[in-house]
Length: 64
Image (cartoon, rainbow, N blue to C red; front, side):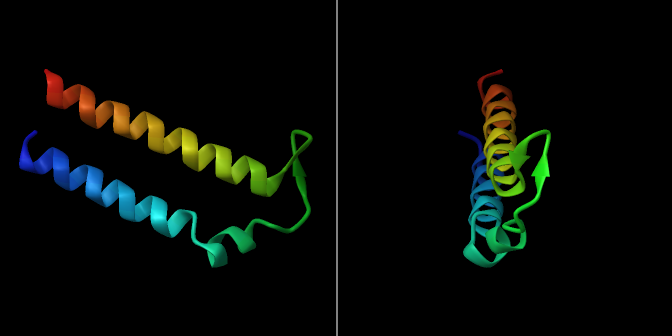
C-alpha cells in the first residue's frame, strides 16, 4: 500500500475517533426526530456510512 493511502486511512480513523467521542455524541442527543428517527441514531448511521464509503474509495484507488 502506498504511503499516501495509509495516511488517508489514518486521518479517517482520527476523524471517526473524534466523531464518535462522547461529547460530540451528546450534542446530537436532544430527543428530536428526523424522518421518524431519533437524531442520535441518524448521526451515528450517517457517520458510519460515510466512513464505509470513504474507505471504499481510498482502497479502490489503491488497487487500481
